[in-house]
Amino acid sequence: MKQHYDVIIIGGGVIGCSIAFQLSKRDYRVLIVEKDSLGGKASGAAAGMLGAQAELEKNNPLFPIAKESRAMFPGLAEELRSLTGIDIELLQSGILKIARTNEEAAEFKDIAAFQRKLHKVDHHQVTVSKSTSEVAQWLTPEKIVQQEQALSENLSGGLWMPEDGQVNPPLLTKAYAQAAAVLGTKVMEYTAVQGLVIEYNCVVGVKTGTETIFADEVIVAAGAWSEQLLNNTGLKLDSYPVKGECFSVRHHGQLITSSIFSTSCYIVPKVGGQIIIGATQKPHTFDETVSLNSLSRLMEDAVSIIPALKETKWEKAWAGVRPQTGDGLPYLGRHPRLGRLSLAAGHYRNGILLAPITGLLMADLMGGSEIDSVFRTDRMLTQKGGST
Image 1 (cartoon, rainbow, N blue to C red):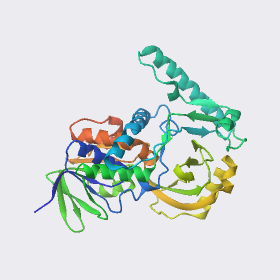
Image 2: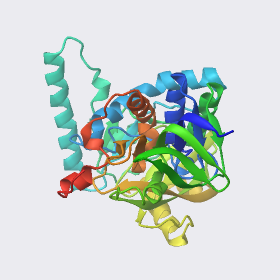
Image 3: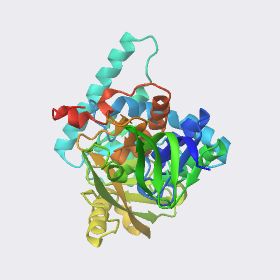
Image 4: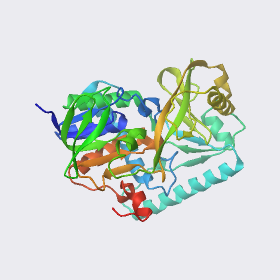
């Protein structure tokens, strides 16, 4: 007897598992098909920063949904814990974006001033005011050292974003997957999808190495590998893989409390004294090896920001391949030519942050809602004058 599901999700990273969780809450019969282990690629390699303000510019179309997704984490953490017993290690300890030069300092001061102005306008125009903690604050070199005493005194200041935070990405992905399973989702790990089953211009299932599995809907959420799955569907994504290399160390105490973000690296303190330092950016490669040259540069950058890192104990190094798009926005929506096929990929460095909102948006899409057109899957074809 042939297997049939309401939705098949190709990809068992944090995005695919978030979608499965939201669909299962709505009583969809869901199958996740993952070619490796769940969360074994970019999701497991991430540092887990929730940098809605640290990573995104004020005019970026991602900014509104990034803030909305960030706001979902406290409730999500409790919901996942109640279903699975897993603590995703949500730390709402802020992110400090440091300025290394006078030019960066001037830019960050402008950002802080703009957000203060925007906050005042919103406060005047709406009856429910926003918390001032949502506004990025400029800190002088003296103040950032007062806040984080381990930081170098040679910095030019910093942009403090108290609402940003972090989670443990492997635990988040595991919690999503287990919660989805509790609600009925089935999972096939170490099973590669060889192709899509297409009938009458609609996708009706997937082919693995051993069987064909049918579904009413198929969602491709395979990160940097999504484009390969779509090669024969008439949709050419403007996307490419970017390798990021990281390493971690251990410290006997709490060296820093907030995540530190700079143009050259990030430094993220984790539960239990672990500190993650990353990440390089090497585009157009699926190679997941780590080079000594990359680690050397990261170490030099990190130590220049926090000199005491020289005294920490080495733990491990790793690499992950993240999906980047030409315009920096993820693809979220229906395939422009094939029915019953959708895509959720291209989140690049914001996959962990955007996982909650992506799960909701894609579940809504399966129910008939639309997603903002800036994320449409054929937008690059449209911009280039192609027909859809």
